[in-house]
Length: 199
Image (cartoon, rainbow, N blue to C red; front, side, top):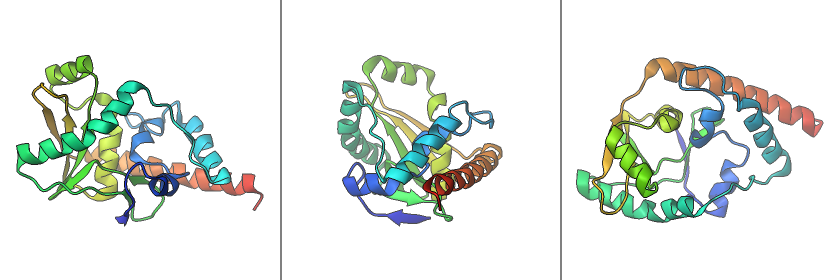
């Protein structure tokens, strides 16, 4: 793993992610069943466009998303207290091949954190179901793949509610498919970008 030490959300961090498949979008490459996602081509063209223009595509943020980002530091500190753990922040982690990456919300001994600060009804739903939401399966496993974590703790945090902490262990069968899908996607992305750049 290679690490680019830029603060998450900073212009330098955004630049480092430009044109790069990262954990948060791997659900657009592969489904939880290990099959190609129907959104794969959309992501392929988006990332090729970012490489060709040198600019990261702006993403929409509603009020709930902004609130979640703002509360992440509070959730990270709370996790450290709950688990008596020293949580380190990290910028962008790159795979050994440097072709894709992940930005965990925290790193602890042997593991990583994926923190979500959802709206109240969603937080209650997560707490009631008590498991990793399917929507984050690929993201968490990409973090394990890229960073070499033994596990990732998925944390759902909402002030006043009991936190949900789910320890996610590697699904090695899925990760083999994920690794192959990322390699294939990156090869196609490189070829598309080169062809469109006229090189």
